[in-house]
Image 1 (cartoon, rainbow, N blue to C red):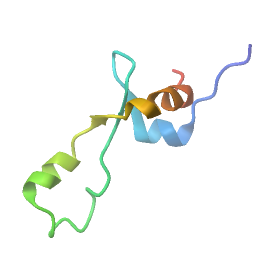
Image 2 (cartoon, rainbow, N blue to C red; image 1 turned 120 degrees about the vertical axis):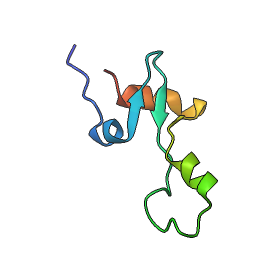
Image 3 (cartoon, one colour; image 1 turned 60 degrees about the horizontal axis):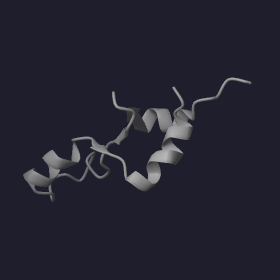
Length: 64
């Protein structure tokens, strides 16, 4: 069997946890931050587990 290729766009956006789940970062946390409350800005800079429905597709994109 040939080797599986990693989807480079996905590898820059997602990370695998120790248990094999895919983790993503929040959007909207880079600029125009003056109008956003502090609580929301803090939340946006934390990573979160990607949705359960997207896990199989993401795992295929990130085989290693």
